[in-house]
Image 1: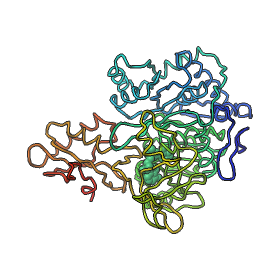
Image 2: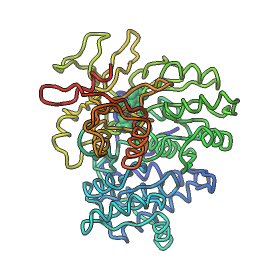
Image 3: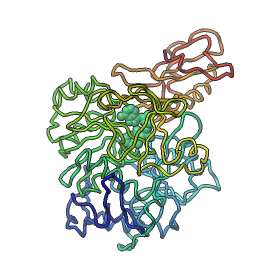
Image 4: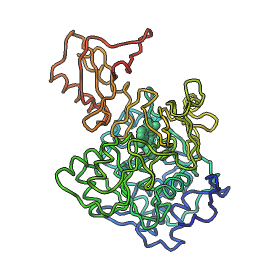
Length: 519
Ligand code: 3UK
């Protein structure tokens, strides 16, 4: 695939872009000019959207956003399921100079209220399915609430809007879009990404590692709101003029296998928890996965045993790679012709990596330490969080918060988080948030949450609870605690096990020592 006009990469993998630039032009508009107007950009169970239609709808969307009062630089919050309107909103905003902020669609009203307020957005557009959480969030904000509408109402605005839109030009490192990322304590942080960041991930990982090209059909079970899904299911296909498959349902073994059989994708992107469920489902009988040339996994480490079982059953490798919201996509990954199960692979060319000890010195060969990376796709800063920014983004380097070791052959082995955060089904989960929910139950005095491996060797939250009345809780109480968490928090965060103890190990300053509970 030839790079778009005016864009190149140096021999050291640095991107060169025009000084006045809008990233919607190479991702959306150029395909029409290059003769791909009638090719499918998006396929769903209900419709196909061609590149020509996409370009026109992106223009209508940008015009509609401006007509709704959004100014260049203002934020558009999107709580949108995987559907073509996600593309229209995201790219329409960017082309009109507005900053789209896609949010995790699995969160609760309280989470949304925080992000709506923190972002200072001018408009919230959400799929009608999430009204039950967005409604209360807006109510909670009262007079501070911005304008809000459903995706369907927005589509109606688009119909009224003009079909031509000139791109608003900006510098390649100008703010372009945000993604929220969670921490172990405190609220989510808006990671601000620049115009050039999607160009960098699409070319360095999408094209040069995975070989994504115009004949590929990409299907990401990981949703578009996730930086991983955003790359897999939207930016890589659009960068290469190829096709993305979208499904708005919750991914299960049944829906994902049926989609692979129907749409015959060449690339499939999942997370370990889903691969585990798919492997269990494959015990019941084979499925036709012959269209796939590669499968990718990220979000949490893929156990080596799952790699082998998947290869035995399907004949296809799962390429594990580590990425992050701040890096935008995968920066260490396995390749089709170079992979080692149980590792995250080798650094993606264009991403510098180093493993540092407690004093900030490089560790000796083979020793573990904290992984830092440097590249042109990393977030510029966290919105409104100068201290977090200063801690995490230091002289162009990004602290991943992960502990890693490099083996003798240059493969990187994940050894856990440097903080207490958990990844559950590939999505962040803060132990503190779950603990705060558990102590909201009248019977609970204190709680600590740690990760524990399930039968597929994947981490899930476990609660260790001290009751107000001495003694152990019964099964009914355990059910109540699980139900409380499911109702109050994003449902994937509930503890899968509850253990009752007389007291918790604490530091002299009263901080729970979660590491003692893990062992
Ligand atoms: C962990 C992994 C071991 C690790 C993501 C691909 O997951 C993504 O972004 P998030 O911001 O989380 C980042 C953190 O998740 N992690 C991710 N992948 C792996 N740990 N092995 C892996 N393969 O702690 C990392 O710091 O939610 C993944 C592409 C884009 C992404 N945003």
